[in-house]
Length: 185
Image (cartoon, rainbow, N blue to C red; front, side):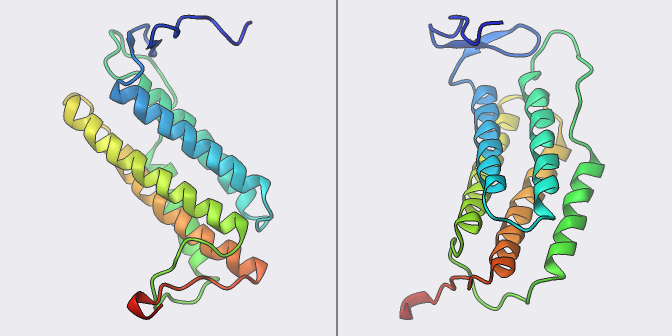
C-alpha cells in the first residue's frame, strides 16, 4: 500500500463513511489536534519519565485513536461499529490522577510550564488537549446531532491528567517546579 494517494491534493479529505470534505472542516481540525496531542504524548514517552507513565501514555494514545474515529464518523450515512472512548476510560484517568497526586505535595502557587524537558513537553500536551476541547465545543455547536458527552468529559480529565503527570515527572526527576510569582517575579 502506498502512503500517498493524491486524493487530498485538492484540499479535500475523506472521513469515515466516505464523505469528502474540505481539510478545514471542523471534524478534520479536531482529528488533526487529536493527532497532534497523540504525537506530543509520544515525545513525552520518549523522554526520561517515571516507569509507571509509559503504559499509561500508551493507553491514552489508544484512546485518542478511538476518539478520532468517533469524530471522523460524524455525518456518516450509516452508523459504523467503531471502538469508542467510554466512561471506564474517563474513570481510569481519574484513578491515575488520584494515584499521581498521592505522590505530590499540595499546590499553593500557580506553576509555570517547565522544569524538566519531559514535564515541559507534558505541559505542551496539556495545552494541545485544551485546544482540542475548544474545537470540540465548536464542532458540537455546528453538528447538533453530535451527542458525545463522554468525549467532553474525557478531554477535560485528560488535560488535568497531563498537568498532574508533568508535576510527577518533575518530582521523580528531582527537578523543582517553576512557580509563578505574580508581579514580583
